Image (cartoon, rainbow, N blue to C red):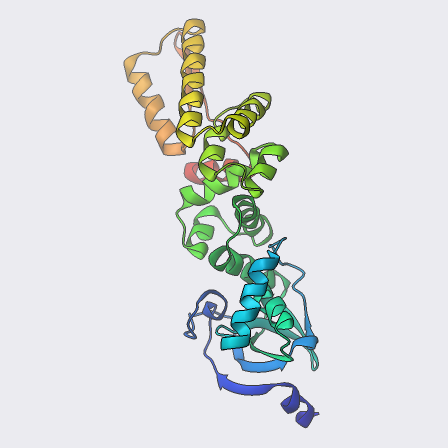
Length: 296
């Protein structure tokens, strides 16, 4: 049995502990509680696909270009796998490299072999793809959402893991509130992230779709969409002012500070000595973010 394992795993060099085998282009290793066993060359045919792969599409032309590069230069950065049994491995990250290696006709491929349970598999695969692949904004948003929901990460922790500010993470996740047609447009590059971020501020879905159609048919710039949405909001604010009594200056300042603190449009309503404060949220994740700020 030992000889069989030696034949299957041609050990090249030992590594320390860490996640940078997944995230870094170098062979340095960051601290982690999950141990990387070694870099080995393993048979391509012995590798199963990653069931947690967040990337749904791969461009054929890009794969062919990568395959040609592999033929000339070999695999520069090993893939990462976990060992299921003595002759089977499961891909953690590096599906493009694996597919391109098959296209290049390689029988064996260098790989980091590490221990990981299913949740760690999902987390590593998601983070590796976010950091290294050219995902579309919806794929990034979905990956963030899965990290929060399935890996039990808070927004602040998620920002630290992927090297992004929490506001950036929130901006991506808010894209998932857009209707399916607009999400599909983002994936197909019919509109940009800037267009989508402006559309998020329109509460009426039907109106979002009308503006989306204008973006496509009339080639609206991001600036034009932002101006259009801003004018809509100004009109709505004027209607609200006409319907409601004006807040005292002191309460307007409080309302502004609360809106800034919570990252959403807080509304204070006052009727005599009584009143209420409204803090809107866009999703369960956004509600959790606000509750964290309130420390509940």
